[in-house]
Image (cartoon, rainbow, N blue to C red; front, top):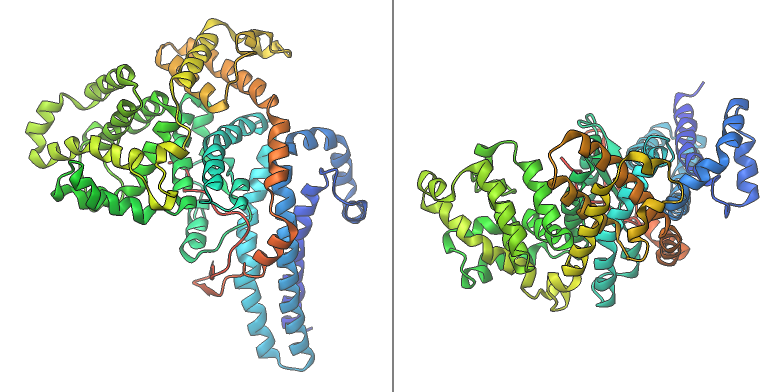
Length: 520
């Protein structure tokens, strides 16, 4: 017995298991070669083969919306596997020469830098795929994926047309997965932080959605913030926005004493302004509910924190609504802030002139982020590339609101979606329908009505996503990275060091970047 050679064989099996696991998912893809299918099916146990055959068509249908991402993943990992095999062959050669300690060093290096990082990454990916094919979540995730896509892709397309993003960025829409918070000691957030800090990119972009948002889908508007953070990272404009908030904002009316603090909050502020531009009053309403649990904490300013207090975030959002000509909804929403936190005049007297100055800065801060030309955007403004939520989208959202409030739960039995007739001739994006749901929820505080809204919304989104699935698949095929690009990227995908048992990425890159941190 040679324990070092045993370790080599075990690592070889672990790396190959990841490849086979990806290929097992690919069995549901009609484009996969018969040779690969036959090889994998031959390794199925009798129980696995029976389950595969019985679930084939159903799983194939549920997996179709993410089939291109799965294909990209599989091709990418095939190239990574080649690099792992090269190092394992090197270790085997050292063993054959009797250089056992050198071989063990190579094997430990392969495990820490090549096997463990990919096991962690693909563990999250496999979880997402299982949920996308599950009875409980497949339709919910199809809806959430479509909302994320509607929020991200139009901006990415405009940025690409202006030469601000490479073509591969159009394939980088994050996929959602459901999480029960807390996830445990090794979260997607921690995993992506290890990747982002060193420039490593992983084979799929994910966005964690807390299960509670499935129960209260009118709060899914918070996804707009996460997509805003993702766009912020993709466009790489953090330094410029922070600089504007610290220097240019002063000439726009921001106090020199507060400008540095506003600059520290640049990331959250950008995401809030982006989400408000994309979802309009619905985003502000949802964030007032989600962030309004602690009225005292909402007004407490901590200049060293990277996140501004909720009260200032709400005011920046409300000022953005004003820039979008949604004055009446902004006033109604401000009344909700007033209800939570008290009279602004009394707050200013209690919290002092410094706090009052921050509140006065909010309009200028909103204008700087939304309307100031950015060099990284080719001289364009955020409002120019975000395709904002305007009067037409607002009117459609109000039609969705009326439709959702108008009926009962019998829509769940209407396979032909006759009940959705009022929208059949009105182009309705999924995020606009979400805004309509939020407006409907704002119009009622009745539990039974909210139950009806829940089922009618998910049924409506099934109708809307069903009409766009073909376009999505066509775009995914068009934007997917080619084999040559994937191979070139995979050559630089391996971390160069490992610390404290965790793989730390190196200077390489992978085909699709990570998404922003999960919703809290």
